Amino acid sequence: MSPSSQSRQRRVAQWPWWLIALIAVGALLVSQFLTNETYVTILNRVAGGIRVTITVTLLGYLLAISIGLLVGLGRISGNSLIYNLATLYVQVVRGVPILVLIFYVALVIIPPVLQLLGIRPATFDFTFRAVIALGVAYGGFEAETFRAGIQSISRGQMEAARSLGMSYMQAMRYIILPQAVRNILPPLGNDFISMLKDSSLVSVLGVNDITNLARLYAASSFRYAETYNTLAFTYLSMTLLLSLLVRWVEKRLRVA
Image (cartoon, rainbow, N blue to C red; front, side):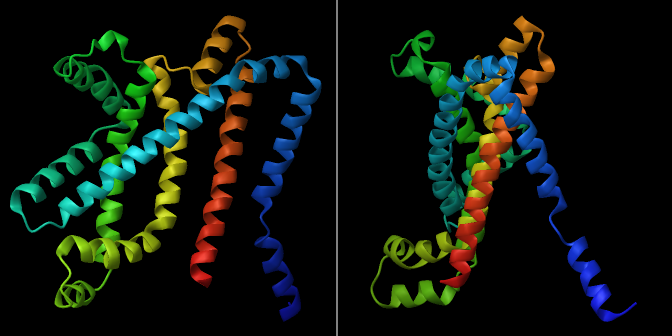
């Protein structure tokens, strides 16, 4: 076989056939959404949950990033107490399934905390409980991401900053963290996509995200195939768009 034929075969083998198949399935479903009254009805029923899903994901991720940064700093702290508390949190959170954490945070931890604050637990919306639960669950993963990013920066930069008269926190804020965040943006983006998918778990708390609305409609109409086709396509569309955005960010970072 000639080199040109081998090269042509490699190009054909490397073609994104999976993407072509995905586009074909997507086009079929879109045609159903446009022409099939059942799919149109289902889409209208679950459309309201898209806003809830996006809201829960965004707020939960912001909380996870905040917790992750603080705990990540604790994981590299020279203070034994802070280090051990941060490590305990990371090990517990990463060792317990997210679904169990959602139940535990929303139903076991939050009610007594609300009572201490003088708030009746029954009045605290389960959507906000779901946000806190997701933030706590993903905080352990983000903590390890921040720790790895900070430790990827040469120790000499911290020493140089301290020799210029900066405090530890000033050096971390102005020198170390900006570089670390640049290094960990891609994994942070991937974690956001993962949280978007895992946000479907909050449906167990009765939160009216797209998963819960789809489940309720399927149970009442017995249109399981059409309902879960719509649900899967909705999640897939959102995650694919976010994946393309993350890849674009990675390319921009490599060029810069």
